[in-house]
Length: 257
Image 1 (tube, one colour):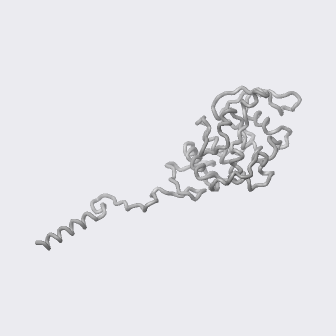
Image 2 (cartoon, rainbow, N blue to C red):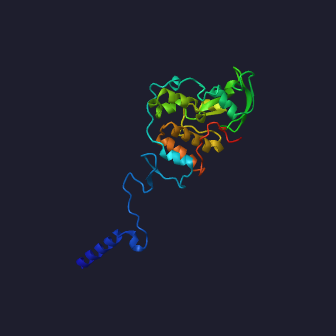
Image 3 (spheres, helix red, strand yellow):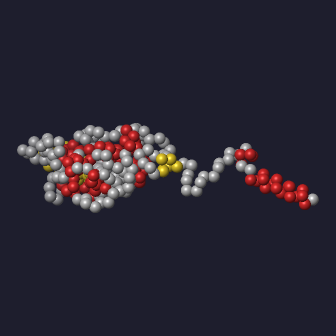
């Protein structure tokens, strides 16, 4: 009697330990602690992240995947002067870069007489960052209403590869029209030196164009992104499959024209 009972108990325990697949239910083997079956390495970096639900497409996403992914370097040694003369005439056309970008991005511009249309006096900006229309008038108390944003902030560039570049290349980063956009002054001030992981434009309809321009600048000057920055840009690009990579620095930077 005791022997029969022992045998019955042993068979019952063994059946309970069989994989659920034996009862027609798929068996999902346990995942090792600290990993996930969804963990995948995203091209362009070594940090494991969950692959987005929709595969990224377009030139901007392809360029993002090729950017190196590293940690932020120390800000030690950074000054604005590390990026050369402010608003230098890098294309040698006789107009400084600030006025050139104002003329590129605004409508209804007027110019100071005798400057060969190189000094903007007034204009109307359809601001891509806020989607507001801003009247611009040149003057000590009004010029700051419209500011020129470095899409890749110069201190961010410094901490992500620019400190290793020569002075001439850094001056191009500071004055490249691809990296410059005329925008609402107070909004630009709030951005500071934030990257895509810490700050995005309030106008959600412009975010795809904004981050793709950031990718274009970093690709042009071989700068890197942090893992958090890459992921933030990737999430935006997931919302606009096929997003192009801007290449024409002289094209208006907003999408309202």
